Image 1 (tube, rainbow, N blue to C red):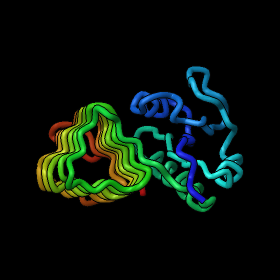
Image 2 (image 1 turned 90 degrees about the horizontal axis):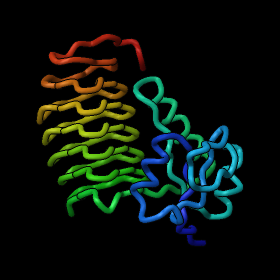
Image 3 (image 1 turned 120 degrees about the vertical axis):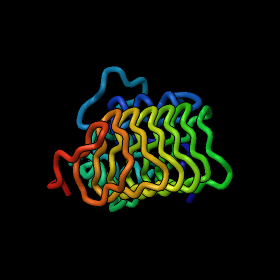
Image 4 (image 1 turned 90 degrees about the vertical axis):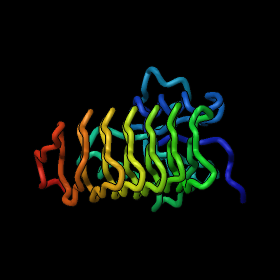
Length: 213
C-alpha cells in the first residue's frame, strides 16, 4: 500500500519547530512523538516512541526531528533513527521552498534542508540536516546523520563523516576531510583535516577531546 503523504515528526523541540517553518503549512504534519507534549508545538501530540509501530502500520511517513548539539547526542539521534528503522518506518525528507538544491545534487532519505540553505552539486547522506542559511558547495560528500549548523559554509570537495556536528557559523576550507563522530564548535574555522573523533573549537582550531566515539 502507498504511504500517506502526511509526515509524523519524531521529536517536538526547537528543531521540529524549524522543520514546520520549512513546510508549506502545518497541515503537512499529522503530529509529533516525544516523551511529553511541547506547549509551543502547533500540531497534535501523538504520544511517545512506543506509539510509533501503530502509526507505521497506519502507513504514515516519518521524519526524525530530534537534534541537540554535539556528541554524544548525535549518536543518541543515531540510536533513535535505528529504533524507527527497526520498527519498519519509511522516511520523508523536508526541503524548504526557499532552499536551493541544484539539479546534480544527491539527497538521501530523511534529510532536512531548511530555509535559505544552498546545496550546490553535493551529496547529502541519509538523515543529514542542512540548517538555515548554510552553504554546502560543489562536490562535497556528507555521510549519514550529520548536522550542518545555521550559516555554515562548507567549501567545495569537503568530505564529512557520519554523526558529525558542525556548529553555527563555522567555515570549512575546500578539500577538507572530517572523520566520523567529530564536533566542530560554533564559529570555528577549519583549515586542516580532522581525522580523529573529538570536539574541536576555535580559530586556529584546537582539539579539546578525542575520547568521544
